[in-house]
Length: 505
Image 1 (cartoon, one colour):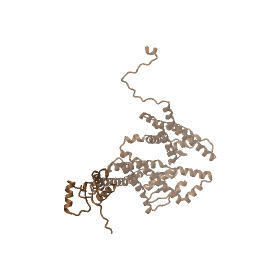
Image 2: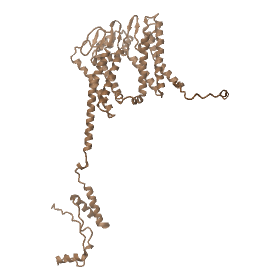
Image 3: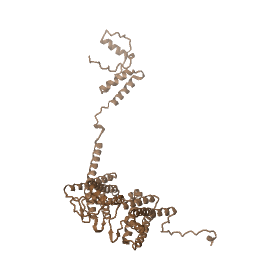
Image 4: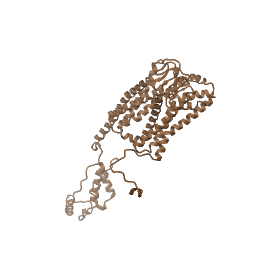
């Protein structure tokens, strides 16, 4: 009872540890709620505004507003909608891509505040739980509106699966970008080196598809204009234009698939670089870019696009692996990883871009063929490019190492005149002493440079008297030299060799 009187708590038993993760504080809870419901709330508000404006522009009452909002929310998540018994499975990818970008950015911003694995798991769970809640409400609204409107409730499991998958992919992408430096340390460097080349290959293929669509629109501009004129006024033309822009990513993915050799089908119409099969098309102005017939032949030259993409991807992989000093095997693994990631991504995009289109039939790209062809092009040319780049880099490194090892100072045929001149100058200074004349020293240095032979020191004189006697014995008539003159009185430096005479005259 003492702990009750003292208002203290007993200490927990030692040796027991709690397996539960600590509960999030108020700031973390606020962040999780923001991640869960802010992107979904913004999307619902934007959908509501578009639906109300569309209904007012069409001079319709607002009876089915909530049902239209719920159906549009499901359509943004690629959930097929059934209207008046006709299933619309081909849904635009542009709103889905924008929503995924918003979710990824929000998760990346919030994940910078997380410092543990449990906090990251909570963040991912919140990013999925919020949209699932909105989806459950939307399904209930659609089921209620089906009594007054020609709407049919979609498959519940399919709807929840599409919503959960899209938001989970976006959330994981955002968290991976925020913590990429940490993830990079836990995976092999050849796998991390393949990330940017794979992203570049995906972007390049989509850019090539966009260029192909733009060129086809310019060529078929007359047909596109005729389809736009069917709108019957400004509002109709604006609606067709907006609808064409929403479906533009779908057509770009189909064009990229055609460039790799796959086939895109719109009902009975088949498009390929080897030949088209004509048929009826929906009256969408964007579809006016599809050529009526392709006879093959030179159109197969477009297959050079994935080959070039593979070469660039392999080059980038080899350069990134080269930073770690790896060999050709790691470069090949990086190139294959980049090709595999690119093929999987393009196959998933092709799968999401297709579906049923009522009486026109199925609109689809052969997604498995698109993925396999993309992997084949990029792996073949990517591996060859990576090996060539690695071999070239290693050969250049060996040549540089060989040149550095063979370079020796003995191979340089440079006379060491400066050292000899310095030694001779020191000898002269030691012989002449403090009274040496600067002109005599300069003359000696110049002579030594011209003739690198060492200068011999003059022999010392034995005795002055003997030297005078020898001189007088050789010649009686001396040149004015007195008998008692001491030779040691001569100026220093007279024993040095005389400077060379000028014989230029």
